[in-house]
Image (cartoon, rainbow, N blue to C red; front, side, top):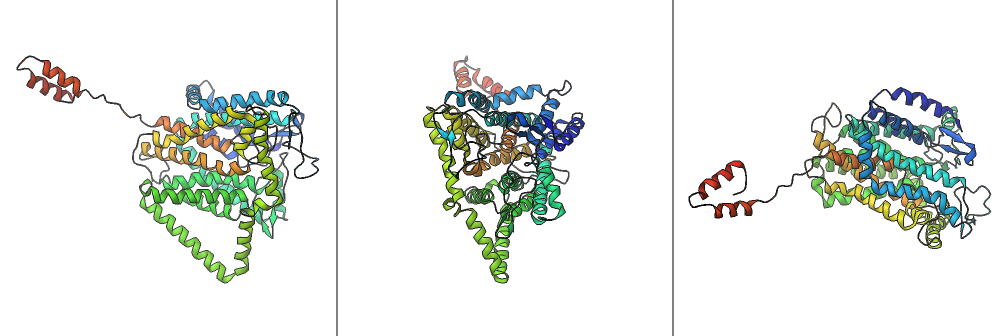
Length: 507
């Protein structure tokens, strides 16, 4: 195992931040996700595997949490209780990754996670333990640690500000780096981005019919789009709830525009899903947002339609090419060789589930193209049930939390003037973002872990739910009081009733 230059840079920044606040360390972890094509450490002993920067940054987050002067260890234990279903999901996945491939070795044939000498698109090999089982176990553990670490970091002073402000900065950096990387192909600037793509990932073709695919610091456009979608949805949800609206709204608009031109099917599925969700919510629950937000959304949609109409009139060929590109990356994808291969990979989950009797053949045992089919095939009934319970717990904080006014706007930053409203607003933004970013993963993810972005937003949603005031339960004592009054001696009823009323009891 050896450090790359990215890992050494993280090492220096991480040790510096150990003596700063826990929220600052959370931003460090979030920002490390920008370098999705990088490796912080290379591990040749595990089949040339590597540890990505965001996983490596978690080490410093936990060092900061567990420092004697930190005092946040109790928050970790609370996080474990609140995320117990995810803990069970991860523990079962870790055990299955080491045991299941040996238990079911040779029972079925699978397309492995790494297949350097495949003879065709649908080639398979007998199931056996590989280094990818260990890698998958590490990633699953990393997702759990990210959930619990975020839970602790958001609960401390400054945690909400770090989450919101950090999301704005990450969205802008990710959008700008994607544009610069796509528009500087073949120039010396391309070498700068290639320098950071030092992970052991396949570097795919980054162009389609003259369009430069947006990849930034990622090895492919789909990886860039998947990361971008998470921060687009979160910023848009914060804007919708008037949390630092000028900044979150601008960040969402910037990264959303780049997503549209990213030529990634992941981006189009994600944007389409969120657009449908936003429209249905606005029609069904118009009171869930301030009227000004709905007007701004309507103006934005109208502006997009007008710009598209002008573009069609001035440059009909260009607009047609963009339309062809979007169609190719969405509805035509299923009929392509790539689409057929992805369907084959997804169906391996059902085959593995059946062959293992519902136990699963272990994370990392085969390449999938659907998160939920991967969970079903690698972790069986236990995996799909525990993850489903945790996902329900995350989403249900929206209606389990006490009702109250939403939103916060202030020049001093988020969560300044009406803290309880801001906590609820950011909690709801996290609870909406977490499940929505799983929609593209449901049709494209090769792994059985939900990813660190999901972990961050899910952990934050659960933490913020615990920060809300709990509703008081007042027992109805009217019957008891009335019986006491009726049983009292004659002449005492009026005085007793007056005393009860004065004490605040029902009469």
